[in-house]
Image (cartoon, rainbow, N blue to C red; front, side, top):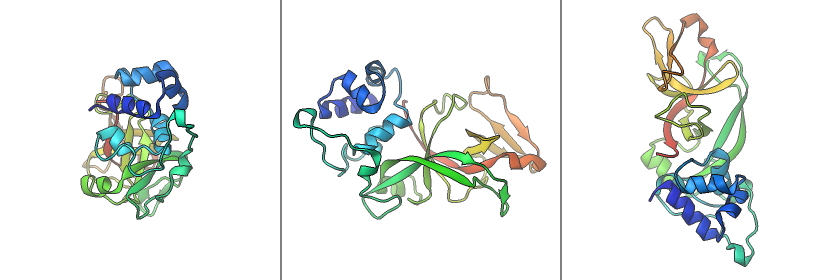
Length: 240
């Protein structure tokens, strides 16, 4: 079953038309129809809304686990459904001991310089949370539950690997360059997701998979404070 088919299942579970479903998650009926036709992928705001209503994002994006995942029971529209906000899902705390983990979705606000030899982001603002199964994080991603952040791919720089709007999970346990890979980082006040590779002279190569539109950039060693690493990308969810 595809992501689109699972979105159809969610809509039918709620007993809504495509127009009403779109209104429910803050998009037009046509946009929701495009999700179901696989002409578009739901962005982070739509996924966060579905998570806030108790749908398991691990199930929505991968098909693993249960649709509802033990979240708050929802009534159908005909039975008088009442809206639930993201905070009302939080029976499991962020990084808590429950079956599900609420991973914070962050935006970057204030950037500071180098601290303790690491390029860090001093202040991050939580927009909302997305629910994932604890066993998926620990068994499949093989990482801790308190060090993950979710971000939305901000542009098409990493196409075809990632699409704009894809949800990415980044491991922030050690926010520094740990070999070449795809990293979430900030530079010039903007959030970016690109490949980083350390050069032999201590400099850095920043490259995009969409190299035609975004040519590689070389950053010299004495200019590394331009790059504030948030974490390394270890998972993506979105349209395949």
